[in-house]
Amino acid sequence: MKKPGTAQRHRPLAPRPSLDWMNHMACRDANPTIFTEPEMADFALSFCRRCTVTAECEDLMTRNASRERSHRPQGVWGGKAHYPRQPGRPKR
Ligand code: SF4
Image 1 (cartoon, rainbow, N blue to C red):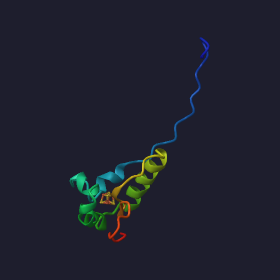
Image 2: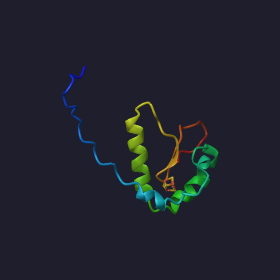
Image 3: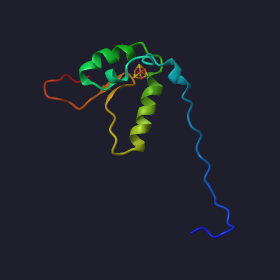
């Protein structure tokens, strides 16, 4: 319990990375559901193939996934399809 009159110390927050790159996403105006439906993966990847910020996209998703250990991102991001392998489905 904090004693009255004692100053609370805060660790300085790490600077947040800029998200300006999001202005250059090829999928910026696309329907986000195409990036989450496995049946739409090829169409979603067609956006990624002409995207200039795939590294930034992948980095963001990797950081989000490691922040929430139970969260396993699925879908298309960073120019790759991330879906569990299904029998008979070729690996992308
Ligand atoms: S790499 Fe693909 S999912 Fe990521 S921003 Fe670019 S187009 Fe969108």
